[in-house]
Amino acid sequence: MEKIFNKLVRDRIPEKIENNGEVAVTRILSNEEYREELYKKLIEEANEVINADDKESIIEELADVYEVLKSIAELESTTIEEVIDEAKQKREKRGGFSKRIFLEKTQDR
Image (tube, rainbow, N blue to C red; front, side, top):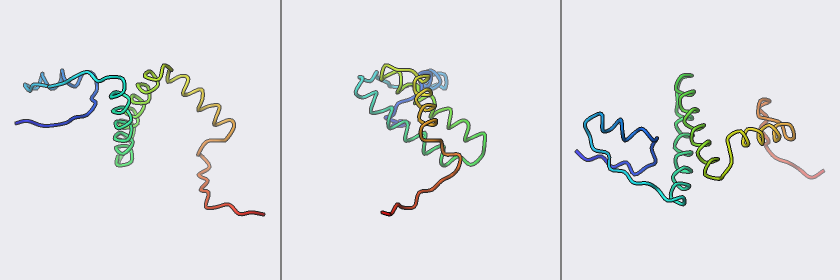
């Protein structure tokens, strides 16, 4: 039976498929295709975080988001450490989200 996926997968997934007795039909993406598929994967993984229903699942899905972020950073000729440094700088300047502030609106004085 043929199953169509048409999506970016982790590097060792074809090996796992082959070990299960199936044939994995794959191709290597161009940089442009890779960028597009990474962004799709980021949305996919973010949705999986949203739909996770226990701590273990949330951690697993956040790990997938992290891996995608690392790959995007690498594609953009940077590192996840530079992204983390930028996040720290933004947190110092603008704060984080720990206070749970929800901005409803602004008004002129």
